[in-house]
Image (cartoon, rainbow, N blue to C red):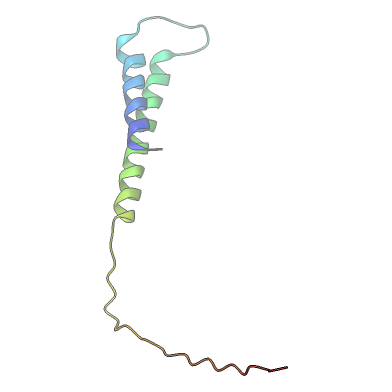
Amino acid sequence: MGIGASIFLIALGAILTFALDFEVSGIDIKTIGIILMIAGVLGAILTAILLSRRRTTTYVDDPVVRRERVIERDRDIY
């Protein structure tokens, strides 16, 4: 889940929790909104952690090792 999807879930959950005032039989809209907001916050945190790990750069201070290869071929003349 990316940052955009996380923000979308947070916004959708906030709309369901705070802006809408209707009932559906067997479903609590406010609870679903809270669950979506929590999922959005967790998704944003996990995305931020994964992106920060991906951006770390490791420098290796090893000298460049060059190898010379000599290839000898015998040509058969027929």
